[in-house]
Amino acid sequence: MNFQTQPQSQPTVLACDNVYKSYQQGPQQLAVLQGVNLQVQAGDMLAIVGASGSGKSTLLNMLGGLDLPCEGSVSIAGKSFNTLSETQRGFLRQQHLGFVYQFHHLLGEFTALENVAMPLLLGTCSAKQAKQQAADFLNRVGLGQRLQHKPSELSGGERQRVAIARALVAAPQCVLMDEPTGNLDQHTADDIHQLMAELNSSLATSFIVVTHDMTLARRMSKVYSLSEGQLHLQPTHSAIGAS
Ligand SMILES: Nc1ncnc2c1ncn2[C@@H]1O[C@H](COP(=O)(O)OP(=O)(O)OP(=O)(O)O)[C@@H](O)[C@H]1O
Ligand SMILES: [Mg+2]
Figure (cartoon, rainbow, N blue to C red):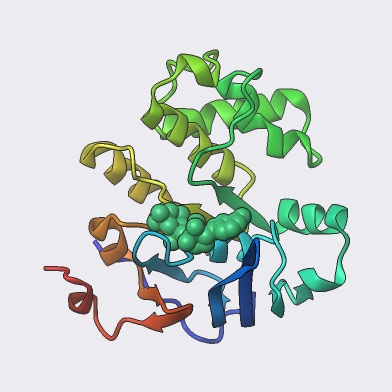
């Protein structure tokens, strides 16, 4: 099953304009992103592939406003992160984005249920509603029997699924995912793909997924590769080795 490509007339959710990012390491400057441009419309399903160290997580951090570019800008719903304080960036992210980090970043002292309920509790949801909705999403990622487990009491793949449920629970307009299916078996990964497809078709949720999983990449409507600091749209899925 392929996700539908949305018509171009959809509103722009996220825009990345000519983004440069370098890291200073002592006297050395490491240029990672060198003029990245990307427009994400409501309902877009994008994959970003690329070699280890090519800058995929760096790019996702810029797109999510977790870090700022050295040059260029990233805008969410027409607002540039560059013009905002860290608190305002956090608020913009909370309103519009869901984020699945490469290394999960769950809150260790809270249960799976509390971790997933957190984005709803930061909004206007009552505690009861938040817990019900969190339990529903944990069920949908196959963790209905692990609600009270803390991250240290879960397997790696289970933690990953808690992180996915947390990113999706508040129905954000755009979800950024860094290797979401890296620790998952094919059957569990298929369930996650199914959940993404449902949210995409019912709410026009956009997804930007960094992945080495070619099954997942093939299911996206566009695939970009990141190399030499720039994004390159793959002409067809077969160009990235899909069968
Ligand atoms: N905070 C930092 N300071 C200095 N260098 C960094 C920093 N973060 C990342 N880098 C370097 O930038 C490059 C890109 O890193 P990044 O994590 O974005 O790669 P990636 O494409 O996500 O790789 P992987 O597929 O292994 O997750 C790497 O060479 C890395 O060593
Ligand atoms: Mg990475």
